[in-house]
Length: 182
Image 1 (tube, one colour):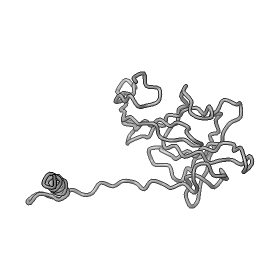
Image 2 (tube, helix red, strand yellow):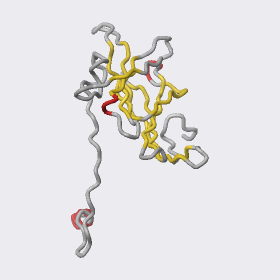
Image 3 (tube, helix red, strand yellow):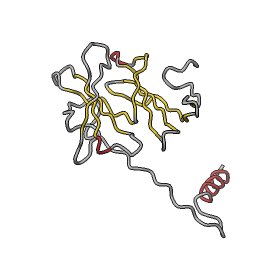
């Protein structure tokens, strides 16, 4: 067993170094993912909490996400949006219980656009689909979010591309919200 483990480690390690006589590739650059100012479920101030930059340029897109007729607060800091229009959307819900009725941070959804779904998670909060543009609007990462235990969590993602006839073609994933497959 030790021989197999050493062989697997050696193969993995060999993939990390260029072969003799080849030109090493430049490392791929991944943008830094912003960190929220507080934890999901904490009392929050929507004008300064969630994923926000040092000098926020906030805009609001409030929506009724639980069907009670009252909109939940949805903010984004435009100073953190990418050139492709991708932003970090902070969701705040009305709190209940010991801490009073303070706004509670319910998470941040990443995308250039958000789409409410027909399905619902905990507390009757609507599931949301986010579209993250991957350059020039031809490819997207489509991520489903579900409200679970006080906050929105990723429930699956698909890689999609926009066809010439404007249809969005996605890889199928049985684990995504709204999928017809088990």
